[in-house]
Amino acid sequence: MKQQYDTRLPRCLANASDTDKDVLRNYYLTASLLPKYSGLKQQVIDVLVAHMGQKSLDIFQIAQVLNMSSRTLQRQLRRNGSSFTQLRDEVRRYHGMRYLLEQRLPVTQICNLLGYSDRTSVTHAFHRWVGMSPEELKEILIPFNELS
Image (cartoon, rainbow, N blue to C red; front, side, top):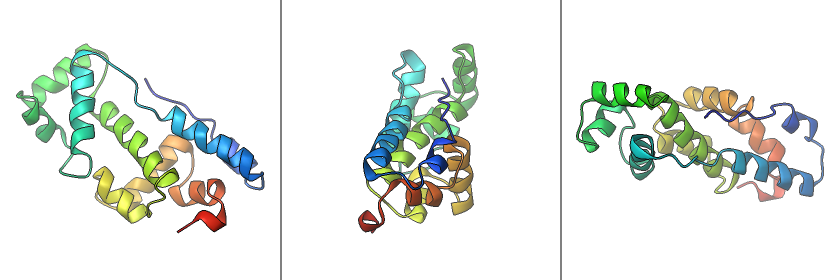
């Protein structure tokens, strides 16, 4: 299940009141919530969440934790209409939005916590998720006096 955001909203509300920005911030946080799955999909999500920021989030590591080969994991997820890449992206989106909008962490730290190799990868991910960079989203949605 891929969440589609209305990427026009943030730019339209750049000069909006703090209340309107709070509403939009909550919209992004709510829209990025992790869905509840059953079976293997939920197991993969749980392992990804448990290992967020601790170790590599590649399919080989996750499959090993689940006591199966990466190929078997791919095959079973595909049979259930999903993929490892999709589930990992959902977990990263969930945590990325929280790290940025709730914890207000710097993008370089978010990069490390989400398991991306560089800052450019995080920027591309945010563009895919919300249509703008993390810096743009932070600038629009977090009042200047709240920035660290």
